[in-house]
Length: 90
Image 1: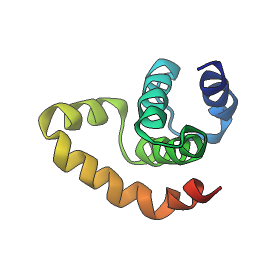
Image 2: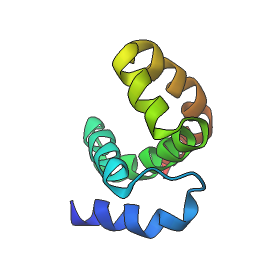
Image 3: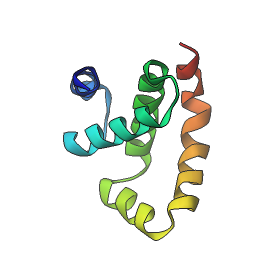
């Protein structure tokens, strides 16, 4: 868990439109723990978070998750998977 938080803190300069660090931490924690190979998920989840932050404000993200989570997750997948899938191979 400390490694995950450290990764989020170190990558702070890499993201243009950033969410608060607490939101990033919880996103990363949830995303990484969703995969079978957690070490490979870190890069993928960081890339996905970056894509989400570039396309949605935090308020938009929260509202979309509340309104229609399934449709929003599908939209996020269409944005992030083509750009981030290569992170799983590392």
